[in-house]
Length: 301
Image 1 (cartoon, one colour):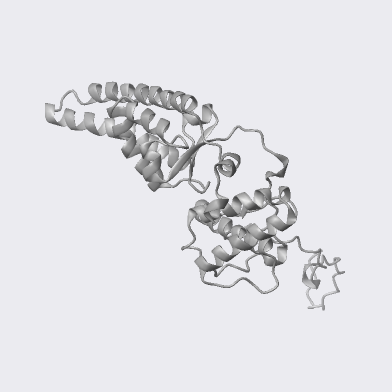
Image 2: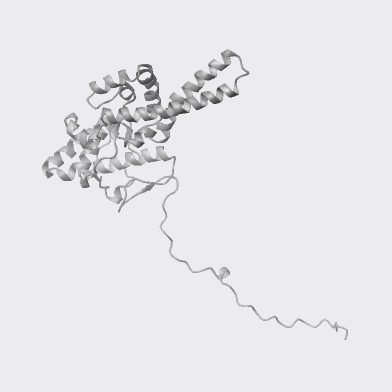
């Protein structure tokens, strides 16, 4: 399985960002953060002039941690890896397997970034990026993340074709917790490039990946199912689970186009055919009022 995750495949699937663009993105983020920190400091000085020196020092430290550490962590978490600087230069922080980062990834990157970026002026981060094969700083290494480029030409063959609609939800009970990120990355690379491979070579790669996946999940593949179809169906199931966790049960289409499946709390419903109204709902024509029985009462003239 390891020979499938080559440097060429990684460069095609996840293109790491280069050091100059990363440095400019970090510089823009720092400028915005320091401007915000200065504004917050001025406001605190104006509003806490009556406090003693110890309280002012505590508020200054708290504002420093909140603005220069807490705000970047929150922005990266809520934007799934896009800070203001990364958004301006077309960069994004992703996991090693290409998935969106979460709070723990942003927390590790932000905490270590205080030391290697703020504490050393970015020297440690630059050295680590130059030494790393994919340009990762220490925060990325410990968090298991990677900064990639988003604004790249998209090849026509990069679309992952969905499996047959009949397989939707078939592997909902499959345990995927033991599958490593490297195997998921290899499966994604294979599915994205299967059409470019020789049929015999592609079949052999799909068989090896399917065998590795079966060994990790402990459940055999359905008999008679092609390895490529099996990989696509399991990858779709994993993407659906990621979508449910990321969007908290909101409807989410895993694949676009024909055969798209909606996941979430609100399931898609086909438009119902027009039904004939019930007899009680049909408006009735006004009935003539029958002559009431005489009561013997005659109105006065």
